[in-house]
Length: 355
Image (cartoon, rainbow, N blue to C red; front, side):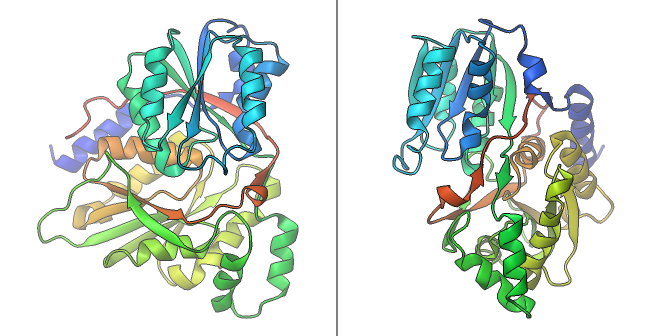
């Protein structure tokens, strides 16, 4: 059996054992006092989503851990008071704050402190680079871990802002610059980082290929492209779950078109992590795929659930190098608004990971 066919078998095994997302409100019903929660103190309101639901339904937790970003205390204090108030409501006297260094150690420490067998890891407020370490720590524990996630009610850029911007340009080549300069999401200055524990490895004499999720700020992708001499590319444009947000798919394509050019761009739902894993795996293991010919780097700039799929793939295909592009500044007031639907699924650890 070839190396790649074994990896493909492990992906298929994972898909057979894992479960789709289900609505959080129905799942948590009747779990009072039996579950604990780990949640990152984020700057988006949706990072409060699961806690708000628990408080509203008078659900009590056996313990609660808040991961507080150590290197961004001002950025993430926006909802701090509300986090602590809700912590006392849903887990009175049984909650604790741990420093979040974006490496997953707060999850490991939190799991050691919590006593519940069933633990919910809320990924809504966890950064892209911090998510892999958090999932690694959860997977290494002996706990029954569930992944929780809350969508935003509305994401930036908003539809009206995008439509106004579209009217103001006639040449697609200047669109990325116009978008990058807007005070949405994050700034246009970035640094590229390799995710610890997911560095992958390079084969002697092989070139490099890039698979990248398209971001709404073109400069974020440009930073990744400028980091290495990539020979081939595959770009992924996120297709929103809700029909009202369908316009965002075409916006992504237009914003990044000067960089993607004539290179292949595949669509992938921002929802359904198992579907994302299946689609990524089919591309990885197809005849003459990038993985067959190159050392592959995967740039994780997609949705949270697409990142969960990327994490699973990285745990199975150890040669993958996981990279991200970190902005110098965030605009928390123009990142997302409100709290949308919340979801949960059981975290399954890949069997027989290749090393």
